[in-house]
Length: 245
Image (tube, rainbow, N blue to C red; front, side, top):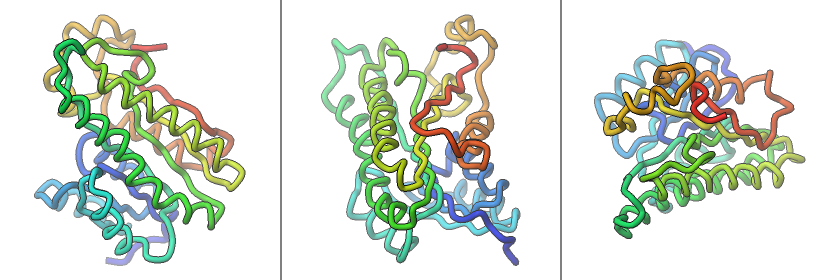
């Protein structure tokens, strides 16, 4: 299949499920060649590849755990031997909720390692390439929990707040080199992440009175990767239906 002229390459960390999958599909629709990561190839990644290549853009799957810095560097060497992607979306994250008084060290460490250290492991190796090219977009997917604390999510809220702080600091470092760094902070979105959330108790707190769709988050990411956001730097776009204002 012939591919159309692309806008460049978009790397989506955690780009094969939930919000990440929606982002991969939206950026493919926008004209980016897609490099998406997952821990392993599955029927779901095969289906995603077929949908994206049907849009006449390229699809590449990288397999690694965001906590495995060695494997990440190996996969990057294969996918980006000479340069960095034009767009980098950090969407990896896990939640292990518990009241802080009862939280196990493993619940704390696993969330911080994946959500925060994973950001370093996957983003830092590519920044120098963007600096050398003097161009690039980095979008970090945080959470409403990183903007306002959530009971039972001290670990998750800490990790997502850390991502906002990291993105803002990085935006100050690299802005003069033409690299735009911004954040999208979703609220309650219809993915597997909310399967244990008592949605009926949260809905009254949301002015729009509904759960968001992954495609609505992907739309915000698309905006931050497009030509209408070229004067946005270090900003947090909230996609939460008014849950937090």
